[in-house]
Image (cartoon, rainbow, N blue to C red; front, side, top):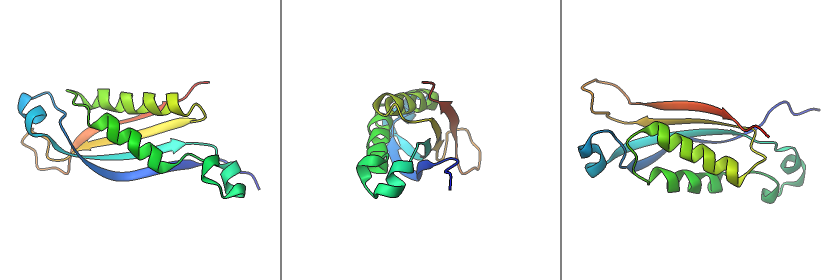
Length: 124
């Protein structure tokens, strides 16, 4: 048996944060959803059943939480910071797919949200 690909993920984690181009958004804040899919080799953990052999999703959550609480004008900047921190902390990461959705964006549209989605490849 050969493992073709493997991911550790967080799905629609909710945060209240202070991001936006408008000053009012940075004052009152808004609700955001973050989804994350990290390509990571889990072969060793599959056999060992030891959390130290994998990428702990609680640690990923803490990284996202830390970066999303730093106010920014652009979600692109927040997403980049999250990806950079993860790949610096865990060089074994192969890829990161990240989606940040701003609930109720101030644009007068009836929608579930707007945001940014990116995929980075961690070149070694």
